[in-house]
Image (tube, rainbow over all chains, first blue to last red; front, side, top):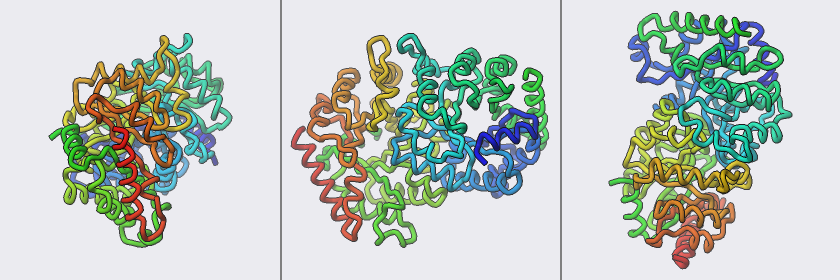
Length: 272
Length: 272
């Protein structure tokens, strides 16, 4: 089963477009888990158990695990293993924003798909869409290319105008041209720029968007959903990280994460 | 001592602009090291011992270690530890081409500078130069931003024309504007596009370039040196990876790496 099929199945089963971002920075973990043997994994496990019937995907960001070196990588690996064994129908997206030249990207392919065995990976386009060919060799995997990010400085490069069009449009067009026939080719579009989401929807048809930036980064849900949905009233993986996993720093963190996930799920569905 | 000072010292001491890329892909290691307990580290150790008086830096690319997960990360860590203890005057550049939004980049900062304790790190500009602020908080570290890469598809995005100027010029200008006053702010420019190297030299003054792509990727040395040198007949860290470390797949790999490093060093110096 390829990434898009796995995603479609869980979107239907859980009736949800919510992705929970497992950005489990050690420093921010609740005191109650900080002293456990595998604090990041133990935290993730509780979050996952509390939210698994409410989500369409989990998205750990590699940076928060790499911060602790090999020990952090082990905690990320344990998290992925736990998802595989307990919730095999929920896709895992590794948010790593990788991108290098061909021969080197093979290393990142192995990290994501052979070692962690995740279903999808975020990658970056600056080196040229050609440079991403190594990732697309894994045809069944979700390859999610950065198009317009959610941060304040996103405009600096991504909105520069080329022949009357902003760079991120050109990136979307080039992605369509080179890899658009692969149903597992996707892009990410920050929720903080909803108008831009709508413009890209016109370029890429029904392609799935990963949309980070609702919640802590304050992308408004209504506008994001209305601008981003595809013809099938789907086509979005809407991610919230800190707003869900760090909703409480107390012993009730998992319960509060569940409540926030449910709230976001219902809010999104009310606009679908 | 900051990155640029450390670099200047070793460039003078070893009379060399050569950086050896420790792209020690497990699959490509000589049979003689493949069965050792720490094959990537043991291989690197031999390469380092054979070349340490001929180089100005070492540049491991994180991808080749991540490929093996936590085990690979340990081998990279051992390599960095070995350099710190045996060759503390040689800067280590982690080639990782990282780049995410602010809060997330802190994780990569910790991976590179606190866990591996490297001296420099490559990062990418697509998210906006603003997004790189987390990296520049470590003022003494070398932050090396992607400007024009060495791969065939580099042109696709990097050479798009904005108001009569290619994107990579705008990136260089924006880097100068936002972080140019930091002597440890640098850029990387692929050796396979020497004309472009010359144009960027005009924009960024004496800023140091990391120049990958000589050797296996066949960037011609003479043109690269002539186009890239700064006023001080320096300002370049010229990297060769495969052409040096995999010059031989036999037991003589370290000796052959030494010969190739010396050859490149002399070739570069003949054009300085």
